[in-house]
Image 1 (cartoon, helix red, strand yellow):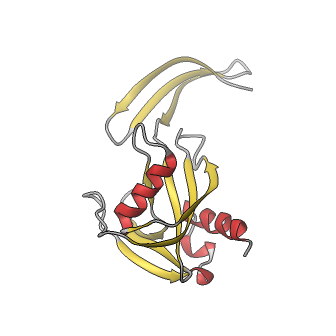
Image 2 (spheres, helix red, strand yellow):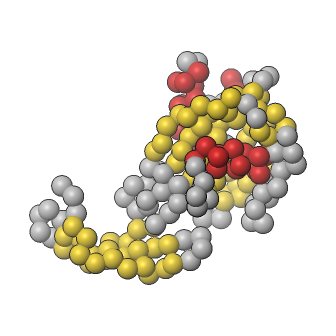
Length: 174
């Protein structure tokens, strides 16, 4: 069932993106000499809820899809950083919110066919403003508070945030 890697090389090896080209032999014997995939770091997705039941959301432009999206905060786990620490850092950087009680909602592969990245999903309950947001230079983020009970997965389109709504609702049993 597993593929045998006969050769592997970077075709792009930059700070924000690494693309590999593998030559693979499938169990059937077929050789694919141009299997391209992204070697990507893990990232986080946080469902932050305040003590008053509001979800802390971000609204920002995403260039790859050329749209402004409403999402839960999150981002890349830095080298040497564990996923929970990365989630807490990203929440604070993007929204200024922190603290609270944290629960892991699981790990998933958003695109296992073409990327090695995993998404670590967390629920953070009772978060509160702790600092001024200070996102990356490419991020212009609008912070939106919405009643948790008003959120529906469909409102996020087909994104990790839609999955996070379902995972958090299951965890909270609502």
